[in-house]
Length: 265
Ligand SMILES: [Zn+2]
Image (cartoon, rainbow, N blue to C red; front, side):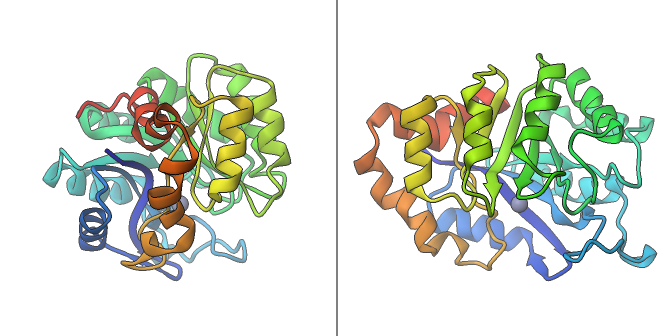
């Protein structure tokens, strides 16, 4: 079994990802379940400029779309609610959307870079409170720079001990020193995903800090229908079963995801 915890739909910026691409690529690569978020909730572009009003899609509309997708494929697709802490609030409408669709929602997703906001900001924390109320794990983009640093996740996770946090990418474009530092604190509520992380680094973290910490993720289908055919992901399908113990491999590819996101298959 394979669970991909980091998948997108959405047509925004240079991204063109649709439902058919997700379903077809899952089939082609034997992925059993994907947690999907809608990238149309980005607030700023790749150069950190606020998107113009006509390109902004409200968090309600962006998330309704991915909830509808999940409703059509309940056995295969779950939702990570992508929120917009720069411009919007965790208001009653968002709470109602979560409440009404809690059965197909598995996480709340933050992208501090594309929201141009520190993960450890009062605005983000307001949303985390809502995630906590509905027992939703928080997944957040981590990368180089202050706002997206894994160290910000550590700071927030300390204040929300009952909420699980997943450091997506383990710090994209870094040497993984900060993510490793975070794991060295051994907080029971901090995890990581393998999106764009080489098998070599994943293996090192499993062997050093434990096999319970990482979940498989990919950003599928961000580079098109063949995203999962890239060498970095083929390593997980072909090499990893040989290089990890059976238990380590199963934890990485689906067991940890089932535990962290409470997935019932
Ligand atoms: Zn992503």
